[in-house]
Amino acid sequence: MAPVFGRRLRRGAVTTAVAAAAVAALAASQAPGVTDVPRDERTGASGSTPPPEDSATGNSPYYTDLPPLKTPVPPTGAPTGSDEKTDAGLPATVLDAYKKAEASLATSKPGCKLPWELLAAIGQVESGQARGGRVDANGTTNARILGPVLNGDGFAKITDTDGGAYDGDKTHDRAVGPMQFIPSTWDTWAQDGNADGKKDPNNIYDAALAAGSYLCASDRDLSVEAELHKAILSYNHSTDYLNTVLSWLEHFRKGTHEIPDGTGDLPGDRSDGNGPGASPSPTLTPTPPASGSPSPKPPKSGDDKPSKPSKPSKPGHGSGSPTTPPSGGDGGTGTPKPPSPTDRVASLKDAGTGKLTATAGDAFAERVEVRAQSTSGAGVAKAKVKFTIVGDTDARFPGGATSVTVTTSASGKATAPALKSGEKTGDFKVRATVVGRSLPGLAYTATVTARQADALARTSDKALTCAPGGEFADQVEVKATYKGKAADRVAATATMIKSAADATANDKGPYFKGADGKPVRTLKALKTDANGVLKLPKMYADDAAGTYLLRVTTEGGATLTVELKVAAPAA
Image 1 (cartoon, rainbow, N blue to C red):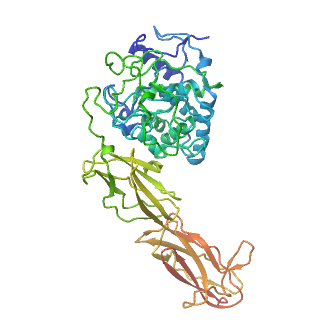
Image 2 (image 1 turned 90 degrees about the vertical axis):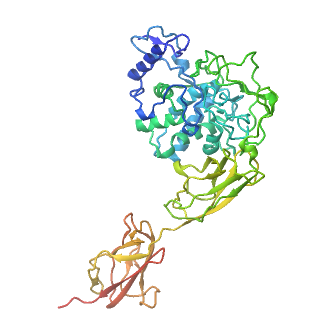
Image 3 (image 1 turned 90 degrees about the horizontal axis):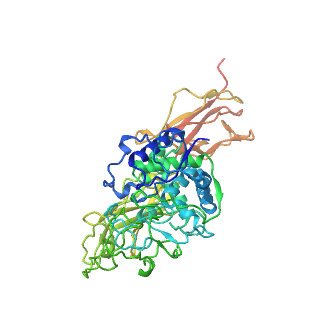
């Protein structure tokens, strides 16, 4: 049997060159293309942080432990002794959540082709599978899992977006839950994976389905390698992160098994340099109950205090995450800290939103625009405004999202992304609210109208004639246009009318045949094709000779009358 090198590559025990050799070995034996990252998807040095919007986690630290790898010659100095059977085991509830998320997305987004093993790979590096499966019967973690404070000191800097509702921090954000979503991303992609009426980032069913939806954004096909890489990099924009996730993905694809909840091994090493045994953050006990929307009140101060070190520690050293400054102050100097942008918002006002209308399948020309104001009426910059689609509609924001969070500009304005309508017609609402505040929101009515045509024309000028009791040799074909362009998928009706002045259906003359073979003189629920063309079924004539009229009408008022002649052929 070939030698096996261990699953931990400790930064203190293994050099960077050895870690690179390990990843290269993984790429060669397990995951082709693991290290082949497109140039424009690679990040710079660890001190260079992309904008928070570029990742689901705010580029928080992650576990760097690699799966067991069989290789003829393990890298010199690499630790050995990994238990492959243990590493391939997944806690029962966590495994069930991943598989349910895969099944759900196979129905809602079949083109994505999300494998549950990808969720397992990300769950491994983000939280060690919810800290070894330490979850209750409903899938909620026994203690909250929080990433380090994203205060810019060694990590991305993300000012608080949720009023501490998810992470207990009213100053900065922290990644939350087993899939480590930052609050603003969770607000956009939150899901109810276990159908309990709640969307809780601390619940593995909810978090796994949200992670899958996030990875499937922008109509990605994850069976395509380039699309898979983009999806993983969107979660945490780091080449090392991509390599680590791909290694675990390949490992889980080779087979895994179920183990009891709470018995999984915890990873040891983190990307920020913390040593063995370090968790991604202090855990808070217990996990607060979830509700349909986050509570505006953060946890009590006694719930989330990490032990206070005698001296401030630098991020990336030690066994925990950076400590949070005392609430309500500037870290102990006694000087009150200024109110956050969220706290300064007193009201939300319309900022000139126009009428929201669109034809089915088209983008809305207008966008919702609002302004966050202080009590004096001044615009509040850097506040978070959430735009949510409400109602029975298939209209969506870019990427298929039903809600998005936007940061206000220097003048306090926030503009929602362009809406695109689906095929459902009618009204729905777009609601704007301030994230982290219980302030009255604004609701805008949006209307989707049916596809229309303003002109109809035959595609041929050939006369349509038939002998009594016979069959017309040619079928009627028309093309619908709207403002000079082809009108695709427009509803149409075709009727054999009595006369130009009487549009009621005739009871004699030409007819279509129904499914039962009987004469039918009105056809409804017709639609033009992608090129605006509509071809009617074959027509037949009874024994009544004469000149008759066929009228075709469309949604939008386009009308075309076609002459049909029933006469005996000339001698």
